[in-house]
Image (spheres, rainbow, N blue to C red):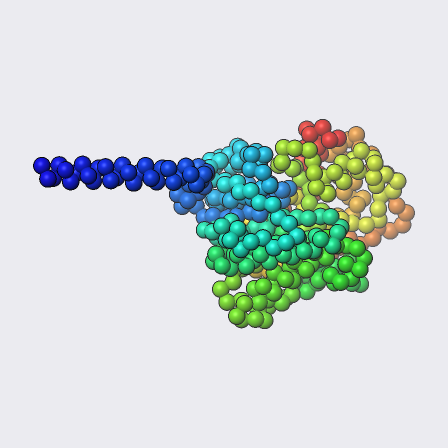
Amino acid sequence: MGRRTGFRRTAVSVCVIVMVLFIALRASKIQKPFLSTLASTRPKATVIGGTGFVGSNVVLQLLKKGYDVRATCRDVNKSQWLKQLSERETNVSSNNVELVPLTLTAESPPDKLMDTLLEGTEAVFFCAGFEHQDPSTIDFMVKNAVAVCKAAKRQKCECVVLTSSGGSTNPIGHKNEVPKNEILHWSDPENQKSKGRFSPAAKTLMELNSLSEYGRNSKNEVVDNKKAEGSPRLCIMNPNLILGPQLHPGPISGNSLPWIVSILKGEKMNSEIPNDSMSIIDVRDLAALHVACASDKTASGRYFGVNKSFPWEEILSGFEKAYPSYKKPKRFEGRSAVPTQFDFSRRDSLGLKLRSLDQTLADLVEFLSEKGSI
């Protein structure tokens, strides 16, 4: 009799515990994807700006490489497309993507918020942008990037990858004939600010402050052992013009794609081909470089996120080939200027093969045609 009573008491206790846990889970509004992520043995990564042009491509690359992803967005309900796209494009369950609402401002985000975002993740990707030519862009980029670096160190993340810009790699007086080196060549942020170029100044200062947070100088050398101790690896991607299909299902947005549409419609760059060059990369290749930085345990410091610098004559001829309705303007007179030269030894050390310009332009034209933009 005593044994039966004891068994009943034990059974009742177990039922009570299960009910309490169930109610607690319902009350805490923990989403199914988060629970799935907790139970997964896959490595975890956080992408800040996960629904943006670059960030959404980074999410897909991470899933393909075997990561579970926590992606930030402004509105979870309006960002479900990323989970659906991830499942369709990667054959990975949508439960392997956790969407978290986050709105960044020009003020530093709270430590507790950043710690929650980065908890349990091996790598964090800061892909947020603020492209207005306004002084506030400096505070936005610097304060948020540094907050990410600090939280990554507190949470013992292995790697931080920042999406920056090639605009931070232009020393005053540099000549195109001299190959640019991402370790040696830096823009002068004070000069950039004096000319009203606040967006590239923000990227330059974001990089310098993030390196300093981990005890490193502009050459990625340790100069403060106390700060450097226990810090994650810091990798910085430096792209220029980023082209390729936009994953976000809404209207084309950002700076690059609407600008290209205006060129293809003959609204801009319509009188003469510029005797200049533009450094280009496919957004899918840029995302792959981001993930390669996190995967390669030896990767550290800046990397050019650039295929190469193409003369505008070649770029517009490529568009004419991919989109016969477009007719490039007349050629400039005289000899062609030398395109910007790069030392790609660091980029190439990541071991990726990049798409050709023709492939990138063809895919972009196909995308813009399907969207009805051209």
